[in-house]
Image 1 (cartoon, rainbow over the protein chains, first blue to last red):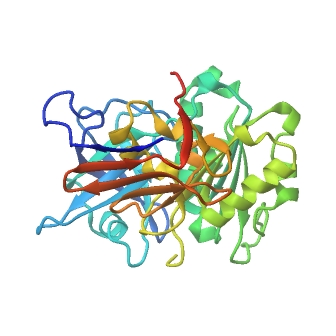
Image 2: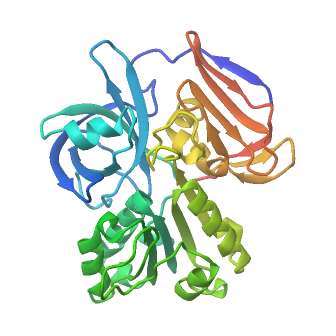
Length: 263
Length: 91
């Protein structure tokens, strides 16, 4: 193919396919010492699928703009959007969102974005979710969507394998425990990678590896729909291990989030 | 996902918003064949570099720059020389 250069579309209705909208913070939820969920009111939000994300754009007083992508953690059934954000040191956007944004504050957002890393109950299962750290956010949207879908949701076997650095770093810990123990709830298996687990810990204490995936995941013959989200090294190791176990590459969908070096 | 650093290795998912400015279809799902090694995969699986002033999406197998998008004062600049074909998934 060739090189194409296009002038920006004229301003006006219909010229832009993905509009920037005003989001207003309505609630802050402290998830861990580094992660905060912002609940947003976004007038005109067109709806989304679990797993999709938004672009967030902050504009400084001098006009400087910084833009980042964040997964939507809330399910399609909930009108308000929830973004779970981890503060990255030296970040341009996350420190403001995590430390400064208060109810009533506004910023720009566009979405929903991305049909590749998206799932709905109608797509069926079994559903295998593998998360590392804040990579759990889009997978949480899938589990919340499944839970909000009643019988149709319960009919989809679902498992979450969730890796966190330490017990204190487990995002959505209590909600995941509730979801996992509810009738028809997903199986939830946790692993801690950087700190000795607390007494009574029922889970693993190592990086996710092929034996863990073989134990937790559905067999390849069950043809599960697999979603893997987390830091790049974790995502690549998990995807490679799953394919090595016999899962078809096309059914293993991956999303890497960029927290290299500084995190 | 939280793409916070300019040159961290993200993937085509994070460029989805920019891709929506370029393509009339959801390009993250579009099966894209690398002109370097003929690997075919959804654009979401390409590796993303330099999101700030545009995006370079590289083949995870051979590192070919499959999709290059730059914001210029005159508009968007799109270079698809690294893509043999792009096939949109019908809704």
